[in-house]
Structures are given as structure tokens and as C-alpha cells.
Image (cartoon, rainbow, N blue to C red; front, side, top):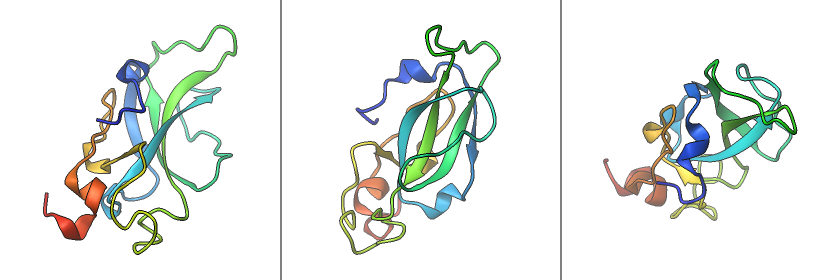
Length: 124
């Protein structure tokens, strides 16, 4: 499990939408963004590219101060293993990285041998 994300934040997730095929990645990074809507593709103003996001159920309430919803977003940076297999993360993975095969609504993704050491190091 990723130590950087609290599962209680995910209690209103209804679905996970992938913009790219998650089976193509050994890992994806996950973060929580604040967005004005429960559903639909959120705006992405960070470095890297968004590869997926969570949509919330109708019971999800916006933060009373900001009016924004907290939603999980999955992303990759240019120096991640998918684009730079021999680079910084040829082995190992960033702290917020999880195996996309373990991502489900309302559940923090998990670190696996594949996400930590790469596709060629294991068959799991």
C-alpha cells in the first residue's frame, strides 16, 4: 500500500477512468487533486501527463470552504520508467507509485514486485 495516501479520502470513489491502457505501465503515480466536479476529466496543470482519474459518487460532498471535491488522479512524469526505462527508475519507484493492476475505487493501490523492480524482474 502506498504510505503517501490515506484510504479515508477515497470513500466516495465510484469508478476509475483510464485515459491510457494501465497494463502498459509497471507503475503509475497517484495523488489527490481538488476539482470543481465529481465526474469527468479534471484539469491537469502539473508536470507530466495524466493517465487516469477517479470519479465520485453522488454522496460526495465538496469541501465547505473551497467548494472543491477531492479526487484521485494517476499520472506519470517524463523521467518515469515508461518513457525512460534505463533512467532514474529503471529499478525502484517513487514513493507515490503503485501498480496500476491493483487500483480499484475506494482502495489505495499497492506496491508490487513489478512496480518496484520492473516488468522484466518478475512475472507477478
